[in-house]
Length: 243
Image (cartoon, rainbow, N blue to C red; front, side):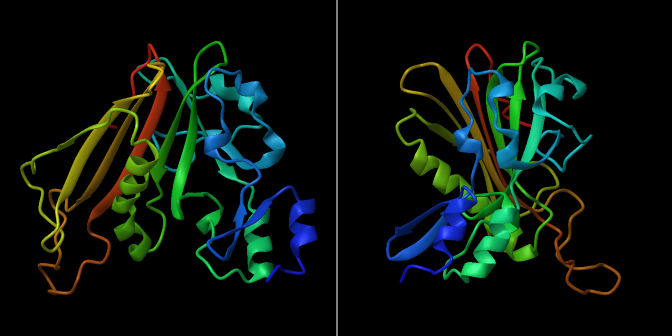
């Protein structure tokens, strides 16, 4: 059944349609709307929320007034500047008003229903050369545990990109979480040979992360890594395979 709030949603510039019998709302502007090879000045700032310097896919760094302030952000070894942004949080309130029956864009910024941190990679001339997507660690343990599964969606989306995937052996000090251990790296090239991608998924305990406290034998909540990283860049740049 179509919601009586539909005119309000469309009036705010949000996409609304039915998919598999469910109502679906999409952000006014997402990381997939970014056009690689175009000036960063073309990104519509009215369609996003926070803008800040990126921190290799981590939490936001120095706030920026505009995407055109990208040079404020320290360049990475590649020479590219990472600029993160969040999706416009107005859509969250609309979703609550609609009382939608599916898992909406968590925390305002998500990809395939996974909370993420998204960034643009901008060259010194102000041209967007790439995009970066990293699952957000600042969420509940349940969402963190599911973060490793995002790589499945990326594999499906980019299945025609000549993907090569490798399982990375367990390093010294690492342990599985229960009986599960994932450290997978995939790389690929677009069919037109213009773009390279790299993605990595991990689900493991790092050195020093123990399931139980040695002092109290209580469960150490959150002592694990579960993450998916995705990076796409135009040639001749190469995606970062390890942060």
